[in-house]
Length: 115
Ligand code: 5GP
Image 1: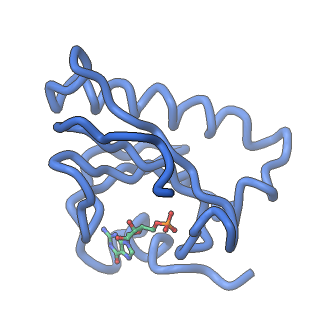
Image 2 (image 1 turned 30 degrees about the horizontal axis):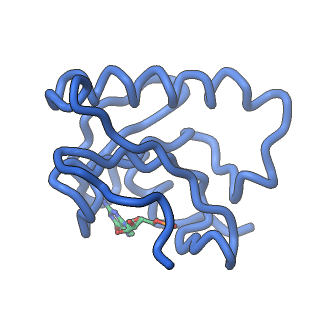
Image 3 (image 1 turned 120 degrees about the vertical axis):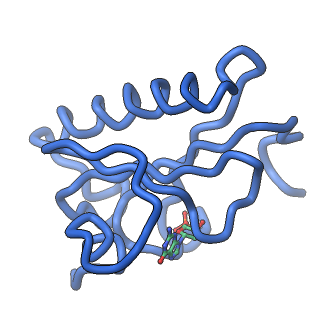
């Protein structure tokens, strides 16, 4: 699968508000926030979808969750709570085919699914 805009953000070839980066993951603000806090946490290696995860990705996936919790705490939304979400393919509403964890919070997010 060809790379997406997220690979260019990870390599800092195009601008994004990067909040965290290490050898495995990068976190940056979503360009079209759906909540007062909307951060994307991505593996540096392009994993297209959740369906493409292999055992070697476990370290990056664990790091993504830990970084999400740290960023939520830094954003001051940990006490009230937040939502972590990964969309997969068409029915999941995935638009960018580089796996990403949405960290959403800063207000009550309502029911999990739009009906
Ligand atoms: P998906 O629907 O694939 O789960 O979510 C993709 C997310 O990436 C959307 O929330 C969208 O706003 C965000 N996004 C798409 N292109 C860019 C970009 O160039 N920069 C940033 N920061 N976010 C982007």
